[in-house]
Image (cartoon, rainbow, N blue to C red; front, top):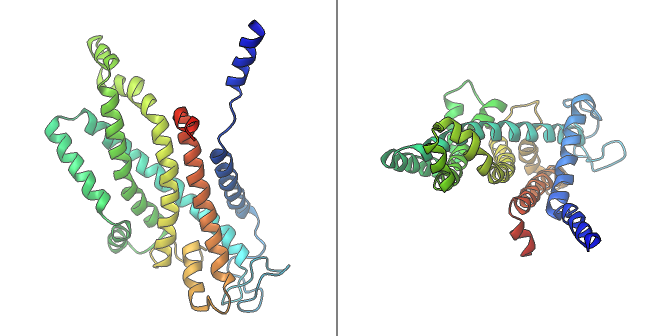
Length: 285
């Protein structure tokens, strides 16, 4: 009998990793490795003209060359680094602003809470690209940090609304009332009760926000509002390959595949995290 119980406990402890988490982690990890590798090594210099114009993939140039004869694999590797940097920076900024605003709204009075909720809805409806244009117009010009700022501010509204909903759900629990009666201040309630209970769902949202930030950065770079040259953003590579997409299609296919693979990996990773945060969802599949 005891052997049966112990074997059942060991089986429960060794629950398999959800396949979306494993698959997404592999794709994201691959881009992380490529991005880190680009810090110390690339096949060629990012601005070096090392081949003919619009060459196809070869042993010398694994992804071919662009319209100026620059190596595309080098630029795609640097693009991985830029995409990860923008994603991390934008998610960190949106987390700081959004979690703070969401928790504050959850503790606010009903009138102030309604005002904050309406403001969040307006900010969510505000297009990220238009926000980036306004920030670029008010700064010295387009840059990597401008893109991070615009994407982070735009994403903070979504994080704030989710944090507000989750926090209000936790604050309605009986143990919160008991903690207040015991004399615990609002800072202690946030630190001890609110954040630990809402963190799993917030992490899932951050993974999704990361994918959205990568897409937004590529869109901004495509429009000329992202990282300026010589930064090799995937969006800028797609924009430059637009004129020769029929004669040299791999110039658009290569950065497009890199972008799609990273976003799919992040979405799968978020799906796997959601399965871990809500085991009943995984069992229902």
